[in-house]
Amino acid sequence: DLEKMENTDMAKESRKLHIFFIPFMAQGHMIPMIDTAKLFAARGVKASVILTPHNASVFAHAIERAGSSAGGRGSSSTIQILALELPPEFRLPRGIQNLDESRSESESGEFMRASTELEEPFRRLVERHRPDCVVSDYFFPWTADVAGSFSVPRLVFNGLSFFSLCVDDSLRRLQPHATATADDAPFNVPELPDRIELTKAQLPDALKYRTAFTELFERVHVAETKSHGLVMNSFYELERKYVDHFRNKMGKKAWHLGPVSLCNKDMSSVDMAERGMKSSIDCNDCLSWLDAQKPGSVLYLCFGSFCHFTPSQLVEIATALESGDCSFIWVLKNGTTLPDDFVDRTEGIKGLIIRGWAPQMMILNHPAVGGFVTHCGWNSILEGISAGVPMITWPVFAEQFYNEKLVTEVLGVGVGVGNRSWVSWESENSDVIGREKIENVMRSVMGDGETAERVKGKVQELREQGKKATDVGGSSYDDLSCLLKELESLCC
Ligand code: UDP
Image 1: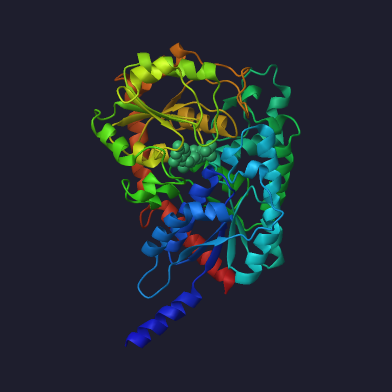
Image 2: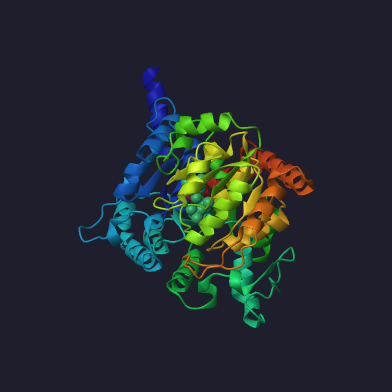
């Protein structure tokens, strides 16, 4: 009987779809792609996450843990890492292994260029393993040619919102900014389901001038046309008008599987504490500090893995935090200096300062947290919504100004701090948001006024809908079922 069972398990194993997941080397790309791979593995797919050797070692434990929970009796783990074998001449600038570690715009450009050299090592892995499908980061357009040459279907993962893709499509095709009278003159983004206004100052450089990114995005668009569709980290109830617009008006094939971070069920687990990177603060210390705070009284400030602020902007934030009514957790890039007296008077008393990497999901899901100042990276927004935490939006670059509109105007789950200009790298010339503005918006979201009640109510509603979407029979669960069925039919 045992032998029979083992044979059945082996037969099942050989019928499993084998999918490659290749994320770009940046936290905001690797984290959601690995969560997506875990989702597939939990549904019986053999998932291989393709990483550079350094990043493979960073994520090894997380993948091992996911493998042991996804792999059933008798079957080997259904999620694994495959490390790219890099040629000896492969060099990343300053040896950095992750785009977030770059220190200047030119260094990030160099990093992006170096990453194209991963094509040959990736080709060798595809040749050796012959996966049934490749889920590729959009920053790797060259995976379309590799997948194509082995007739393997490619799916694109960009980790963006449907909303931002709809805005981007309108801006590219119709160029409404070309006739804007001034940099700060609002114009309507045409042909969208809602009236959305932006200014030229809020648009990415690559849309206004030719930059290295303009070229990358051209290649990204060509690669998309050679792909089978897009895998999205979102859920239907969150952006239904934009999901429909994307599919029906823009004619794209896409499956929404998110919020993918909800594949991590235990919020106090090591997966939360070591998400992406080992946390720079002892998680138990952080939890005991939070336990001692009143429910909904802590403001969490984190600007993702990439944003840099000028010293003068940091002083304005520090002053607002010190004079405001709420306590706080403020996450800063390593090496950031704050005024000594601010640190002496507040650290461990009114707030926690985390230099480096914060256990963001663990913090957001703690009942003491009542607000989230976010740079509007899409992962952070989804994580804030999934935790039911209202937001203060402070977009800086990339597509963050588009996401701000979704959060504040379409969904009504946050209030903007009022940043007006897109900058890829903060310099002393960047706009500084003053302390009064910051304090006012903190009061309106963290206080007990009408705005606070409204945004809290809306975000709690969306939190429930997000959870339902990923449960069995929910919209994201069902979309993954459809995608798996389609991939099975393609492969047979
Ligand atoms: N993150 C974290 N700790 C930090 C900073 C970021 O865990 O100190 C995680 C965050 O939870 C999210 C990702 O890193 O999953 C950042 O992605 P996002 O799209 O929000 O911003 P990006 O870093 O790509 O600008």
